[in-house]
Each structure stands twice: as C-alpha cells, then as structure tokens.
Image 1 (tube, helix red, strand yellow):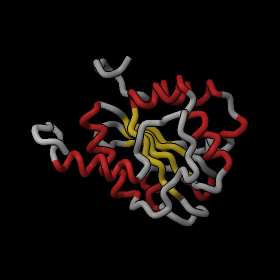
Image 2 (cartoon, helix red, strand yellow; image 1 turned 45 degrees about the vertical axis):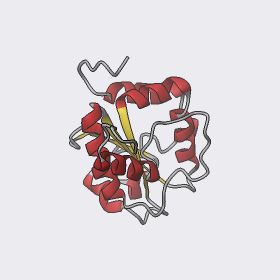
Image 3 (cartoon, helix red, strand yellow; image 1 turned 60 degrees about the vertical axis):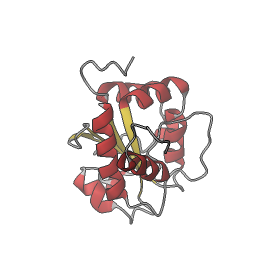
Image 4 (cartoon, helix red, strand yellow; image 1 turned 180 degrees about the vertical axis):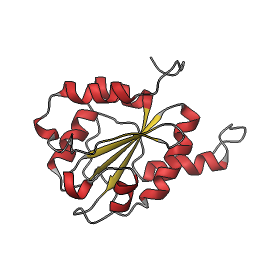
Length: 170
C-alpha cells in the first residue's frame, strides 16, 4: 500500500480476503477452473462482503454451488457475458459458496432459506447492502441453468439490483 493512500489497512485486508474467496467482479475474459473455493470460510466471506457492499451501495448475491456442477458452470458463463457482467459489477458483490456434494455449508443455505440439499444447485440468495435477505431461490429456479435462456438471468439480476439512485451505477 502506497504512502498517502486513502485505503486503510483494514480496507486493504478486506479486499485481499474477498479476492481470495472469489468475491469479485465477474470478468468474461477469464475462465475459471475452480469456481468455488472449497477451503473458504463462507460465513466469514459473507461478513466481509456485507462490509464491502455497504460501502459501495451494492446488494450481495450468494451463489450456492459446487465445482462438479455443470449447471453451476453454466450460470457462471452467463454471469460473465458482457451485458450481465456489467450489470452485476455495478450492482452486486458476488459470493460463491461451495456446498461440496451437498454436504457442506448447508447451515448457510438454511439460514438464507436456500434448500440446496432438496432443490438443487446453483441456488442464489440476494441480500441488501446491510446483509438483510431480500430474496431466496427456494424452488431450485436456476438448478437447470444449462437449459435456460440468457434473458432469464438478466431479468433476475435486474429485478434484485439495489433500488434508488446511486451515481456509481448506469
């Protein structure tokens, strides 16, 4: 960190933790071998994402999934499409939560009303910038992401972006 930088050590640490835990803008040019960090402390990453989202007036999208899941990879490809990637980058902090073989981080799914064990993955929850649940995919809405039209993903992210004016968006 350069001298005179406005970024505090805490902010620098927060950005580093989020980068390691795959809380990042979606970049369509960078294919990712492992979409989900299997060793991440997901609860800690969510707390860090809430702090970052509050500073940037963005919502948080929790993406429950796994590296072995083809529909999770299909969702990721859609999220990296330029139009959707831009919308997501302006309006969301993305947290990818590894659920293993539907035997990991299930308590977080339950806490956010996302029944990953029963309804499939990928499954999303949207939080406001303060971490309050706005929406949970309780019926496996994206569990068949590989067969869905791009417009469905676009509509979802448009619907749940933060409301109200913010000069950083659009």
